[in-house]
Length: 358
Ligand code: NAD
Image (cartoon, rainbow, N blue to C red):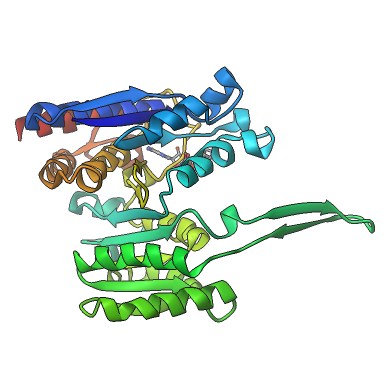
C-alpha cells in the first residue's frame, strides 16, 4: 500500500490531476497494488481559504506520504499579492525545499505519432529521448535578494547565486546514475567562462567522472546548449545543470516534443518524491475540459517507477499513452488534421481503459 498526497492546485491543476488519478485507479485494478490518495489545499486556492498558499497541514501531510502528486498553481488573481503569499514563491518553492527534492528530472520524449506536432522538422526530433536533470533547491532562486531605492533616484536590486560542493555533487551523482541506465552520455551545462559558480560546478562534476568510467562526460556552455537543443537535440542523452539554466533549457526541450502538455517531471533526493507536469496552471484554458492530462499521467508513471519501484506498472501507463496517441486521439494542444479531438477527461479515460485491458 502506498500513500499519495494529491495537490490539485489552481487553474487546470484540478482537471489534469483528476485525469491522472483515473489512470492510477486503473493501475490499481490491473496490478492489485493499493494506492491511498488524499487531497490537500495548495496554491492560490489554499490562500483564499486559509490565508496561506502552503498550509502547515498540507506540508505535514506531504511529509507523511510515500509520494506527492501536484497539478499546478498560480493565476492572475494572486499575481499582486506580496511575494511570500504568491502561489509559486510562497508554496511551490518552499514545498520543494521542505521535501529536500534537489534533483528535478524532466524527460523529453517524442512519441513517433507526434513527431509532426513539433514546431521543428520531423527529421530533427523523431525518436528524441533526452532527460534534463535540473538542480532544484539552490542557486539564484533561493539566494538572498534585496531591493533598495537609490537616493539619486531609481532602484537597485541584488540577487545572490550560491552553490556548495555538496549541493553540486549530489545532483551530479543522480545524473551520472541516470545516464548509466540509459545511453551512458552525460552533458554538464554551465557558464564557466563567466561565472565562478559554474567553474566550481565544472570542477565538481569532472571530479566525479572517475567514479563513472562507463559514462561519457562532456561540458557545454549554456548558450551553446540552447542553440544545440534546436539544431541537433538527438546528440544529447542526459543533461545536468544548475537551477535557473535547467528551468529555461527544460522548457525549451519540452517544446521539441510538440506541447508542454506532454511533459512530466519527478523531483527526487529527499524521503518523499514530488511528481508534477512541467506546465503551469494555464488560466487561458482552465475549466474548459481542454487541458492535455498526459503530462500529469506520465508524472504518475514516473512516481510508479522512482518512488514505488513498480517499473512494469510505469511501463503499462507509458504504453497505454502511446497506444491512445497511435489511435489518433488528441487534445487541442497536439491536434493535427484528421485526428480525433478529445477533452481532458476523455483522454484520461482512454488511457485508463488501455491500462485496464493491457
Ligand atoms: P503555462 O504552462 O500555464 O501555460 C503556457 C501555455 O501552454 C498556455 O497557452 C497554456 O494554455 C498552455 N498549456 C499549459 N499546459 C497545458 C496543458 N496541459 N494542455 C494544453 N495546453 C497547456 O504557463 P504560463 O501561462 O506562463 O503561467 C500560467 C500560470 O501558471 C502563472 O500563474 C504561473 O505563475 C503559473 N506556473 C505554475 C507552475 C507550476 O505550478 N509548476 C509552472 C509554471 C507556471
